[in-house]
Length: 234
Image 1 (spheres, rainbow, N blue to C red):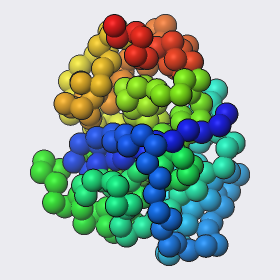
Image 2: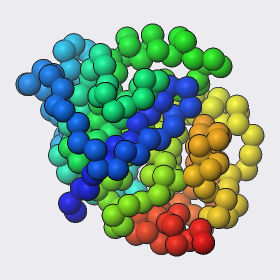
Image 3: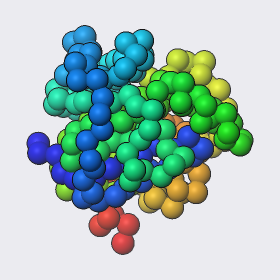
């Protein structure tokens, strides 16, 4: 499937998705060689090989999960680990996905930690979560059957992937911080709720997915544009 334009961005404080439809970014100077992740069509560019290995592990986790859910995960994807994100991205952002370029940009682990230190209250998310979240956006972007999926549809896939690839103990800690039994209906899964309380939104997405009758069947509807699409909210 041909990938269309768009940018998604991940903020340290609240994981707010930013969509700048159609904007093209100037290329960033990065290590040209890159590290091809083992068994994946993902190449990571980073000045520190240790950072590239960390990112490959997170990307592999996201790819394996989404492949298990029936998504196509073989499209080439570049991940650039940088000290500074593209200018079009708001300053509090830790990572972003540029759909037109099939590229993910992530702050280095050191820059991510430095930025997270200034967040109040502290986020319960870590660097691995950042990687899986953004890679999920990238993979979802080439699996949607609709040209302009809604924010909540994109974030459903990203948060589901992020929580599903967490260690069990870390996931339980996050879920314990956000009360709820998961969304009961599709109409409750809105962009407004996501923008107001993104991590709470993510916890409810994960719980919603686990409910009987949802799971992969709901994910297929979502990617086909038959769930969480604009016509469903009228």
